Length: 355
Image (cartoon, rainbow, N blue to C red; front, top):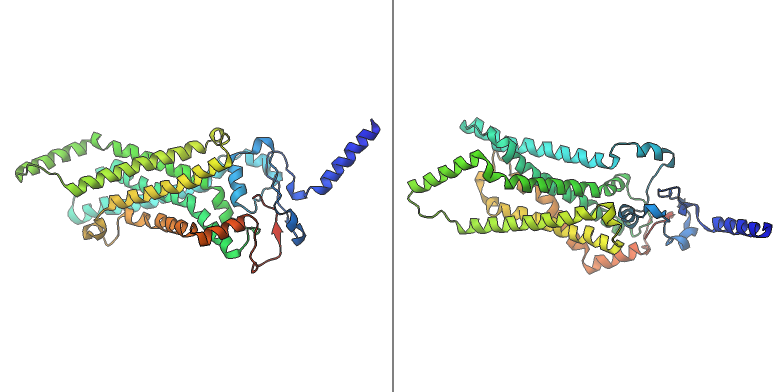
């Protein structure tokens, strides 16, 4: 028994000597990764070890896209007692965007008619103004969920290696992508509910009667406008499909559902379907604009409508993503993420990372 105990102890000591200190885990958290010299290059492809109850898609997402995660093991208990720590930054951004778009829309839709034409349009605030703020916030938050991935890819291409730390602001941003996406889905769902409530408004019924009376006065038998009908049909169709895909993304973000998926399935849903949803939302906005881009009446107080402003950022993200999936870039990105390093790589330090 003594010999066996010694053998077990010796084998455990050998295992501790062979295992890098940066590969050990402490409880249910990622172990702190240590910077090492170039001699660790042969061990760069060793995966970080996760405890059995910590293999959730959020950790896998971190492992796929991050080089370094800073975690203070001494403050684990304090972090567990915090109230929604991961939601603070996305919630602040969403609130700031909501206030900004609300003020912008209020000035254009309510204050301008009152000051220039003495029309009381304040009744538009509860439904119409809010329903113009919600889609703007939704598509912006959804864009902010996919923009850091594009920035990280461009940074890796520029550096020619994945064994270097991302800037701290980019690390934090990427760790909050899930929250940005869920808040974007929430705003999009609220936009759909608000839109369905349009016919229930008393003001809409009064306006509908006024339109009918004006048509009779003008002796028009039909008020059918072909291109406007097509615009609304396509606009609503794209919105429904985009919201359905966003619902799939939201359901896949639930830990119980995400744990039942393989990493390839989870990555397909969150990345491929996510970019498709962003594309549909962008086209949804462009179809809503239709021919309003050249309508001078849309530029109130020399300011463009919000749908012209919010469509710029997602268009830039989609264009960048389309460029990065070209073979000349995608092959190099794949090589870098598999451990290849460019000969012009700066810096001589490396970090153990999960591929």
